[in-house]
Length: 512
Image (cartoon, rainbow, N blue to C red; front, top):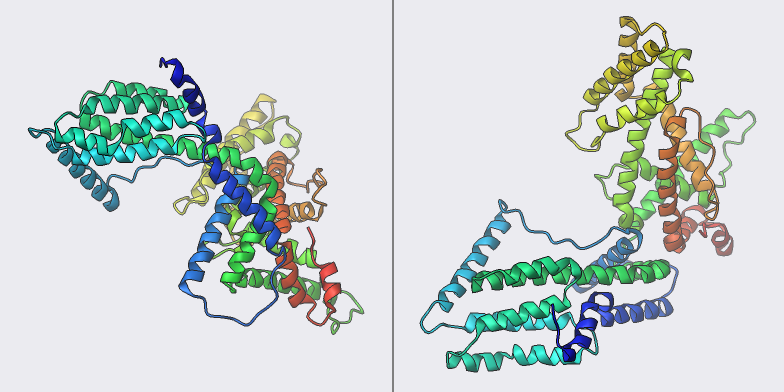
């Protein structure tokens, strides 16, 4: 779009508005982070008597939780962005919205078609458009700001309307040209389509649609610019925000406390079983549990968590990611079971066949897609997998001149694969224990250590996938420990060291 000389500087700076948009908001966020981290304690407040929570305090806690969740998502999810979403047309809300919008635009068209035209609704639209355009400008873009205010001066437009001298098409063209200077390059085609729209009412409607897209673009670019800063300061920010939530809502650690208590009980039960099986053990002595071990076992429980019930408060920001990891591990467990059963049933004829294990894995993955959905039928999927497995094994045997599986062996193989879904299935239990052992070994590694623990037997076919999932899981856990370590230490101190000196408890509580 050609620009005259006196507009070029403003246009250049405006075209880059997304890179520096909402700089005042970023500065505000920067001040908020600095002031929060310097003025708020980095460890949980000491216990205090329960108090009644007012509505205002509850709303303040909700806002803090929203800010915490949003900041966490922006920092850890590189694909996070705001998307333009329309309500489903068949929904009640979508239908009402559609009816109201149609009524408004029909009313506007009727007013503009009067003789003389009535411009009151149009003037209100121009005033709203002016405010939106001004919100896109970067600090210092004074010339284009003044121009927008002069051209879209509602008082002037109202005076022109009184004398039937409003150039509504000229105003619309000015708005489109200004949008072209301010929009991201991805919106250039939308601007071209606006210029080709002849009907003034439809044009105004589409202008608002493109302005909505431009606001979304600006928000996403601001998020992109904010992400590196959040990543550098996220630990302190999340801890501070959660402390504010805890001050407003003293019960905000109840579920977390229960989660840790369950982990302690599991460890005590496990230790008790081991002690009773050891000759000469003193069953009356109280075992000394490691806080780090208790916490790590609590994290392991999340991989088998029933996500229909509420997750501990300190893990809400990663609930979706943890649920996805759990579902991925369930899928990998099925594949490892299928491959182990196939190898044990068919025997040495296929154990060392190149690429056969990968072929079996590639066959199983598509048939297990969506196994987290309620409508997914695992038995049916395993039946389909077993049919494909028999076909691939027979093909491999035939290619090497070996006898294929007879009917009895095929039925045996298919029956064992189908039995994976049964409770206490020995193969499924074995693979599950080995997956848990690998994840437990992963958490036991120092957070700075990048190497993976040895892969347990039977999991080699899914080693690449297990290491990828394990890396994501360890990343979530290690970050969660950094943020909420002081809160966990306080809970563990009360549950494990209630009779011990405070200093000792603090030194033994997990610091990472």
